Image (cartoon, helix red, strand yellow):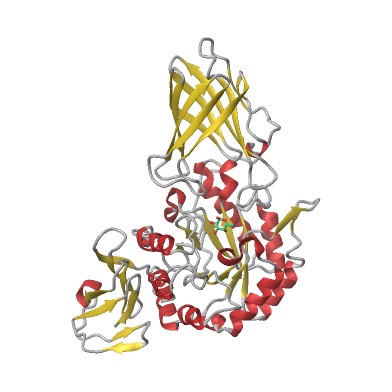
Length: 515
Ligand code: GLA
């Protein structure tokens, strides 16, 4: 990364403003063996700064930069966010170094961002105003032709169900744990309840061989044998990659090898691909994202093997509007979930609203994988997680250690009455009908129209147990005296001809099927 390569963007040193004009670097210890280097290239004209702010993966053009004596500030804009995310920086120059503080006034920090940062010390590395990006920033691909949507592949008529290694195992997933998980998914009854896909997430990848074929690392000695094993259990198997040079965990990505990788995965016997954007930002512009995803969709189809295609780009650039057209069966709608009430409830309740128009058989919004059974939430909260994801017609990808599953976890993941709501053949994503109370602590009524009847979720996000009432008319049930079933109590509700009042625990749910 220290070896700098000239990219053709060059400014003359500007006489009279030489102090801040030039190339500056900040270096901090990275997580791996490489340092994290951030480069600022400034050209100052009068009080105006132009130039570039670049990390190892991304270069941003400086907008509205100004300098006043030793104090200066500038903004950059991230076009992968909708609306573009503005980052603001303030600095103080002191001889051959400056201190820079990051201010992020608008919205949440970018995916992977750490929020406001600073101050960081940048040292002058050259008086020249020359931008040298790192080798990772160079592009070798051809320009894409104008984007044309492709027809659906016909798979995933109901939201995909299964298990994924990331939430529990992250980089520790290996051949043995995947085999054991497949065994446990069968013996626990998960398979028979519909959890079919056993998906290996990031960190399986090895280097490319001399012909450019992707290999596995030492954790996965024989992928074909592993896929055969998982298939022998009546399950399907999934794999992970991304359109960039590197995956999110820094392993080999599929950039420039899309068809070759699709062929390899098909030959190994994979049935599902999660394709994660991450470093693709370094090689594609925002307007190329759709085509970069479609390229892999086409490659998968060229293999002739039925492969579910899962887009993972954190909901950027209104993916719901084009995810299906790019060949996706599902697409993430947000940044990563973590095993906490705060993360789950924010993603599930607040960040899915109005996305329902994009979901339907074959193409689903993905609010991220389940955390049920991982220990960071209460049983009541995990029940809410399962209920909300089912009302949202979300993919149900368990993310726990299925080998050691206590009954209270099994009772949630294996509630077949709730799973039936998620898997309802009408394939309609549910919506919020009403919310009352202060932000983040609301009492919320949700509904999901079903092929027959309506699913109703009464959710209490507040700190105290609370009575909640739902009128059947407000959830679209017109029949008098409908049949009402409580899907967690597993009992029919009687004496509720027009409405129902019930106590809902703090952070809990009462979920009903009304026909
Ligand atoms: C991203 C994805 C996660 C997971 C990791 C793996 O953060 O959003 O779901 O796949 O990458 O590195």
